[in-house]
Structure formats: structure tokens, C-alpha cells
Image 1 (cartoon, rainbow, N blue to C red):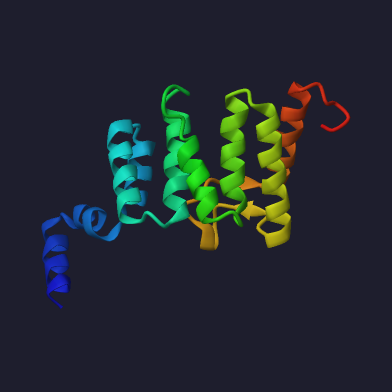
Image 2: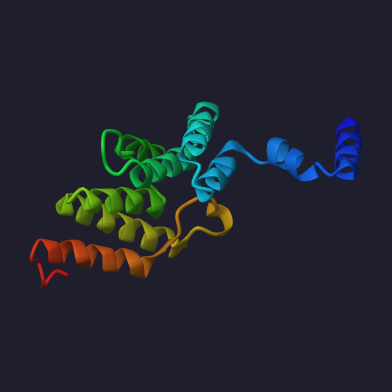
Length: 165
């Protein structure tokens, strides 16, 4: 009841959006918002905080790993450890394999990428998760099964496996 009164007063004072952001949105969502605003330092702090609070949640490792892979220009900490942890916590979701495959592709580990794309495809078919990033699996990178097939074919083409592609 006290929270409702505080919220009502805050809304009347015009700071409701701030309170909503601070108290009702989790660190993962805040990190994603910081990332969209290109506040990489703030996003990394919040991703780290989300991992500290939710160390058994595969989504936080997946998102932090994806962020690291995209934000650090493939230098020291590429995010592969976080993506490995996400897979160890939930190997039954195709996004975990697909994100690691994307990173391996960017690192020119085409054989590793092909292996992970194949895992993502097999998991997607088996679990009937053909489109990721909506419904139960919010906070996961968006991709479709068709994209995973196309990305795998591209990795095979880099290895001159044109028949397999």
C-alpha cells in the first residue's frame, strides 16, 4: 500500500518514469536500454550486475556474451566464456548455440561456427522454437531457423564446401 502511495505521488510530481525505470525494470532490461543508447560502459556495469544477481539464469550470460562480442571489437574478452556458460545452463534453446556460432564465425572459426549452427538448427527443430526473441523467450537475440541455415551455408562456403552449403 505504501508503494502505491509513493508511486501516486511520484506520478503527480512527474517522476513516475524514473521510478518505473529504477524499481520495476530489471538490470538486464536496463542494460539493454543503455546498450541502445550506446552507453557501453553503463550497459556493461548493468550486465555484470545482472549476472551477479542471477548467476543461474542462462539469459543473462547469453545477453552479456552477445554484448561483449559486439562491443569489444573482438579483442581480449570476446564473450565466448559467457556464451559457453549460457549453453551449460540451457543447451535446449537454439539462441545459445546460434549466438556462439555467430561469434565463432566472426573469429574465422568456421568449423566451430558450422558445428554450433548445426546444434542450433537441431535444437530449434526438436524444441519447435523456430523463431527466437518473443513470448516466453523475451530477452534473447532474435533469429529464425531460416537464418541459422543461411548462416551455416555461408560458413561452409568460406571453407569451400559449396555442396554442403
